[in-house]
Image (cartoon, rainbow, N blue to C red; front, side):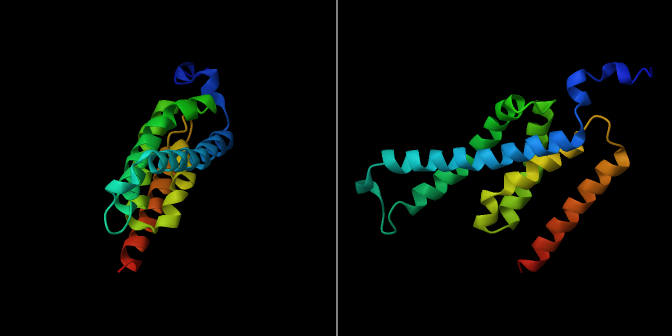
Length: 152
């Protein structure tokens, strides 16, 4: 047994495909939690304090807060879905989420986690070679560059 194998726990032995699928499931669940947050804010807010455009400004602000709240809630959800190490995936996911939030349209923002959390899980897979991690990151940067150039 190699000395590097001793540092890998049995939870880390999970196949990369299982980790990516579980992280994708977290990416699907988190927007629903964010939408529930948005509905709660809309239900509890006093309509008499809204401006000319209604409460659209409040909802946009609540959505932005919800984006970051979903990032914070990702760690316990990933842990619950048995993605190990969950903290590493939760820490790496914003590096994929923020460019998607900035470069994509609103409907894509709803499913940004569907891309970001699996990519973070793939990049943080313990036994994945550095070449493959670099390939994943280079592919993501290529897509971001394409989105930035095409948005005009």
